[in-house]
Length: 125
Image 1: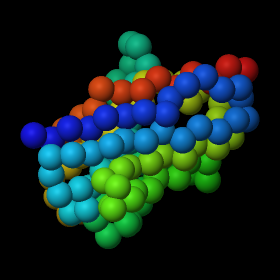
Image 2: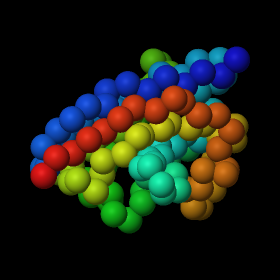
Image 3: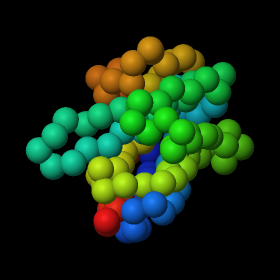
């Protein structure tokens, strides 16, 4: 049974940093594409970053240079380091798993098979 559990969200002032984590279980974590998504009420869930089994990464344009996706295969954990946060980054952040070695070119929620419950990130100005 695949389980994804996010943690590490919270409140921070603009310009600050947060790291969110996603603990994975129930499948071979190292062999899969993993992604981070975010959603605010009334808007569609959007892809933020993804990383494949070969450590290739891709980012949403607006977070490039500020966010870093990484993973620790020994701990079955996915991370998203977020620096220089702004109010526009406030959202519920979700991790997701796609049951393939590689990710597709675009970070689309319809390409992912399993989801966590989310962790809230709030950035105040």
